[in-house]
Image (cartoon, rainbow, N blue to C red):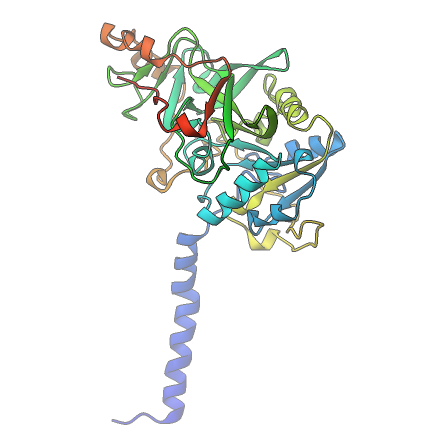
Length: 376
């Protein structure tokens, strides 16, 4: 039976309406998620207090919303700091080439990462995120809330982290992006206690398969630098917790003081701070394009309801393999099975886990041969 043109048009209209009201919202719920770790959002897991504090200190603060390639426009590299809070998407080869050039010209980078793609930039240096939970008997109320010690410019700080990871140091560097003659340096500025563990098997408890810290603890913050013929060039700092500077953690312990002092160390003469928002899922309803002197996009401020579930729920940019958002161990009930004394075989590996806190200089020529930290 042939359909009239009017009937065909009606069927087409119904089909379009069904797709619009049923299928599109379903698809949208899969591919979109609320933004977090944004310098221009004021939810509990954003970093707007950090941004506002930097503005109050006199820094010019703006954001990269489209692509890090805009750093090509920067002319005063040693007075510019790119801050990356959580790397939800990896940097491409072209973006890394741009960042490497920026660093060689004296640029500064600060990365707050954990279980995300932060190694895509850390791999340019001798530091590497382990990607496993760091447990420490030095905690506050909830075993996910770990206290660590930091040292910077002769000062010491107590920081409170939320579900952090550790870093490895003295890792081999095979990147071809550095120019000939570039030297890579590193020093540890944040460490866990000697009673800490890396959950290598991700089972939530300490077992013989896990890595146990030595007297110096595990690195949680590493300052990496570039040097050529004795001249200091770019600097990059890697910290193993993307939530260190979020709004809910900003005033805990010495977090705020440390972060502001760290920026002052990276930019001793002041300058410009760029938050790389291009690594995050963007909420288009909260973003407005604004012309900046680096052709950047600035998201507008938005307000969201507070999250009473914090800190059991976590500001986290997870790798796709962790997309289920496994709940953090919470409450003192988890302590008994978690912090049993480790077996002798585990303790015996402590000597292999010691990191070098002193600054190590590694040239590109011998970096590939530098021994990776072994965990047994």
